[in-house]
Length: 419
Image 1 (spheres, rainbow, N blue to C red):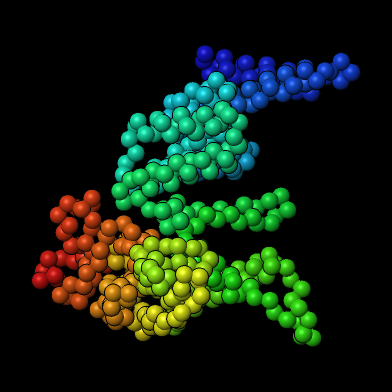
Image 2: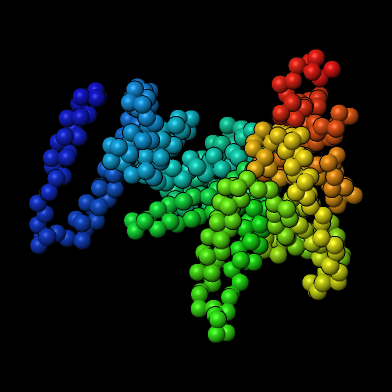
């Protein structure tokens, strides 16, 4: 069928569906149900064609010729932003023929197809090794079967998370879902009233920081006459978030560097198993995550007995001072691994505090949150060179010889400068 024939067919369909005459007196339950089933099929097929022609628009560079992105073009054509983004994701998923075939038949709607595509992407991100074609095929069949069983798109994504958790647990180097930063998500959605709905899915490190900060700032405040705070818990937490945002904006505006720890976190350890750390809000964490938190947060160790009763409150971990962070900015400029601005960076203990590492200039460096996670969970290491500059040691999967790499701001040095 040519594009011209398709256009004519669509014109006929539109003419017949525009203000159709329906005799409600003769309309039966069965007839209404059949029409709804047919309309769902038509809707799925139309969505499939929209995805196909989104791909055509991309190949023809239509949006580029107009000086805009394809998503912007679709929105200008009247497609809602969420729908435009969904079409783009599906148009890009050309390597999953079973999903495409199901949408082409009308048996699978674009929302379910999008959930499957996003689920497969999530599973691939959770695996420390490349997902094989056979594994991807099995995951696709599993997700398609759940869609065919009538599961909602959100349930399909939840099931994909379960598959990702199993894959990470069964694969060497896999991370528990709670500590996997690579699948963190935060979405902002404005509703019809102009209000903002915030949805987040965060690992324990970020989640514990947010929970602790909100918990501290959302404490009830008595009224001047001594009466109880009239705000609900939800309202107090929303006000706490605004306080956090105001503090962040002020910090960015005057380019200040915190003179105290960025956050104070309680680290709970059992006297029976001191290596097993747990956070009040997020629960158990691995030792590597505990070490990462202690790099740039004030962490207080609390030892408990088998019944959870505190036996000892240890000293608060010493955090890097304002002067030390300024010195790191002068020396490192930003993240030593990727070059991210210093304002986004944590101060990292090269030798962990828990292993006797000192909080001084020769035992610290700047790392952005993502690269900081690579050091503690991704097999990367940092050493202090004889030149008193930090050097990176990549994992064997990146460089089998594990040759030291200079910090990001020193990788453009000339050989004579190094000499």
